[in-house]
Length: 73
Image (cartoon, one colour):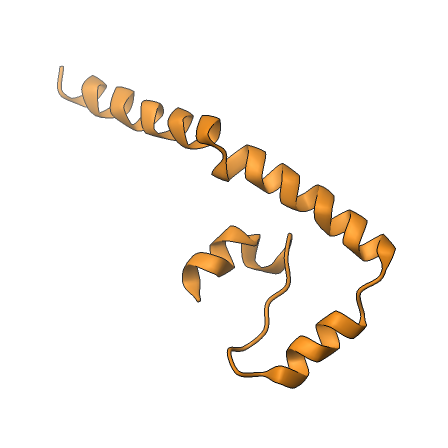
């Protein structure tokens, strides 16, 4: 799912498996441990703050608007 792949930064801060691949999902779940979970948790928070938070999205929109305004002058 493209939007989910983007949200998890192509697997950098989340886990990806093919839709319907129960064995792939099971392997991911069986390989989780507290160390990988903590590392992933930190990556998720960083990704959210950087790209998905209201502040990050607002900043990107503001930058786009200012860029468009600059080209129209």
